[in-house]
Image (cartoon, rainbow, N blue to C red; front, side, top):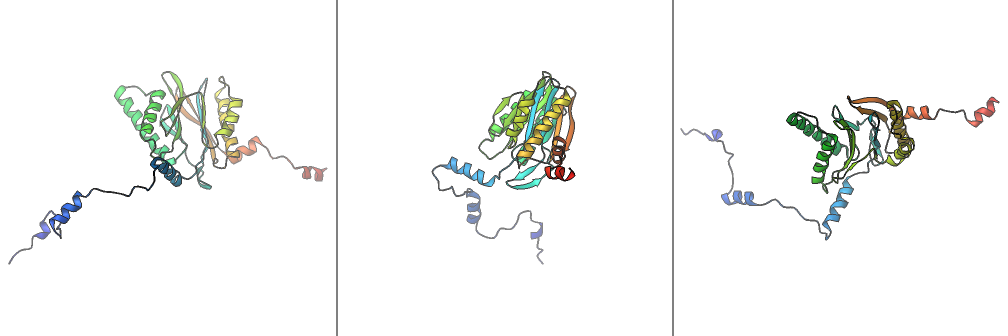
Length: 268
């Protein structure tokens, strides 16, 4: 009697001719190219088609005590509010923060990736990476992915051996050094408050109140911003979260409810 040993064979049996197998392996993967003469323009239009409208308000500024970073917490997709509790200020290391504006997944992933690179730099060089170096790392990474649909508008804020540092980095690889930045759909409203109230020699409490008020006014005028106004301070001892206030409650703090004219007439 002949034993059936096919169950012990390591290869999967192939039914067909050897030419069928070789033909399948040698065929290169292919796809149809869009019928257009302007492929770059087609690509940009396609990216915009699958990227819904986004909105946010983030800000940061340098003053004599360090850096203040503030943001709202609303995530939206066009007119749909998907979340009111997004953490838009991301801790890169104990002395550095990043803000999130643009695509949530893009910002979260690349900030996490930057945190890993900063830690590896610290282990290799026995010293913390500077804010300048961290922002340059991120800008170089994003520049290598330009035109591929990333949506990132971030600020890197922190304290290093030279003192406070603040940089703006975007998904096109752009990088700017400055003392005041606001990013997002609510930034024009935040800039109005920030520019009118900013002074370099503010105390931490004054600076935090300015940032809180700027975020509140942006959420009041911009429908894509809202939720909670979070404020962080980065100093020589690292970052610290100062407050997280619901913007609905801040509205009644800044604009207390006043009796209407009709009520005053009735009382009179």
